[in-house]
Image (cartoon, rainbow, N blue to C red; front, side, top):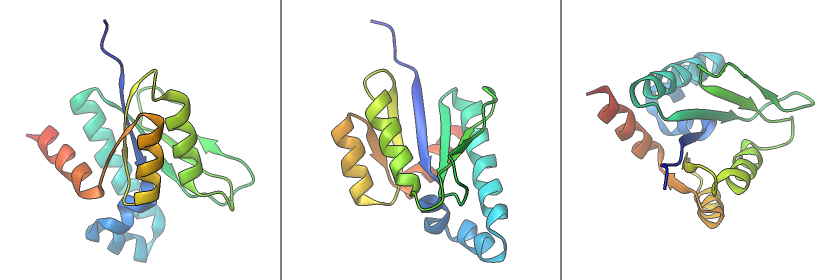
Length: 135
């Protein structure tokens, strides 16, 4: 049986507010924190080959997404729609097809993605994955 493609889905704001250095950047300017997180996620993707998707709460009227296959895929939810809704939809749609791991500090979201067949890790667990890949 062929190995399933691995994806890491990151609840962007959950991780930003869990990591002190990103939380500090966010207090100055939210875009700086997002860019710093995405850079670390891009490095992780490059080092491991695991495809990475980052999902952030957005403000627009529709879901926005990047589409460059060599980059971390980034989604911004619609205004009024939490990033959790996109993450849960991705997990329910793709958990059987791909090996999914969701990084979040939200315990309800973790339970939901588990019910869909995906795994979850904490923001500290994500930090460990990135550190291990860096070595």
